[in-house]
Length: 300
Image 1 (cartoon, rainbow, N blue to C red):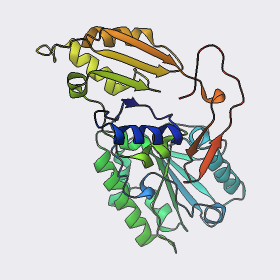
Image 2: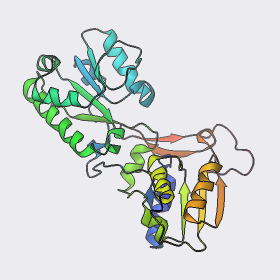
Image 3: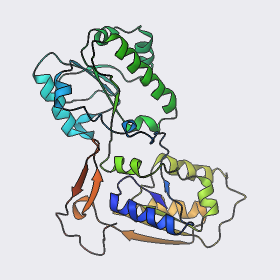
């Protein structure tokens, strides 16, 4: 059973009960994510990143994150602080319009190396800063060099704590890009789907999952390159559960892995569903259904 990130807490708990009761069910996620889920601080915003801490800070660094679309509430806090004056926002990533002025220094991760070595002009900003804030998102943990990148960020934070005028221990704040990302990470450390899952299982059940993710595309490309030429599939089933039917990807998947049967279960979209999720601050919120679903679509 390959899970997507847009699954609410109720469905995750049901899946947990199902896998505990029947051990032949195996849960997977579509994309590998090298997040250490032992500590909640690795995938949440800091519990003390409130209005008072932002108000007492004069420097904020955004690393590969767009708070305007990924966290509008946080972006409003940063904008409010910027309008009060004496607040510098430094950005590493693509050029973005955050509705307030910011300084983009690069989209290359080598800039972090120069900051750690002290060879960058912006090191002076951190030396003279008061309670600086660093914010990134969980997308950095999907990179192949995520382990090295995380270590670089930890080293940068250590040096900022040493040299900046800060009374608090600054650490990296992680902003989650999707609504249910925190609950999904808090649920369990799931392995990503691999070729052996296609080889050893009776069938694959995709729940709220996009078949156009890089990992699924890689598996399809390996099959087209005859990577699985010695493997034969017999009488296997493909089940998809989502609000849209990607017929092109499904046909390619059935052909590549000789999946004989396909069953599609149409489910409701966000506005037609009630559920519970954990937001990026660690608080439990509830979604209320505002539109009645039409046709045969049902909730998860």
